[in-house]
Length: 122
Picture 1 (cartoon, rainbow, N blue to C red):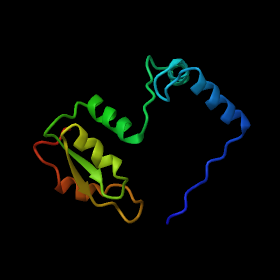
Picture 2 (cartoon, rainbow, N blue to C red):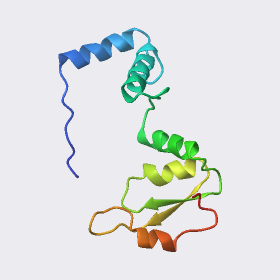
Picture 3 (cartoon, rainbow, N blue to C red):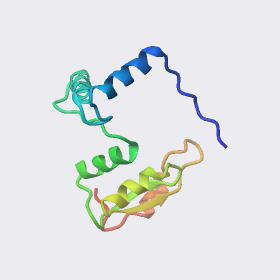
């Protein structure tokens, strides 16, 4: 097992969660969620912000915002979590895994250039 960071929370967080759930709130669809989204939008000085329930959905929304659609190819680093290629698959796009550079563990751009296809959005 790979150890992860244990969450730290106190009575204030526990009470806030209990009060939220008792008020009829769903974790991603309720008044407090809307308030949170509004505060994030204000902080970022943007018109809208959306809270989603996980990283896969956030990546999927980002792909859709970029105009990626069914049948498009998407270059994805091979050192990633499963959410990255899964987001592509959710909308019918084709994830193409690219090796990462050993120096910085980011996508190897020379390797990426070799994998460019006609179905890749640019």
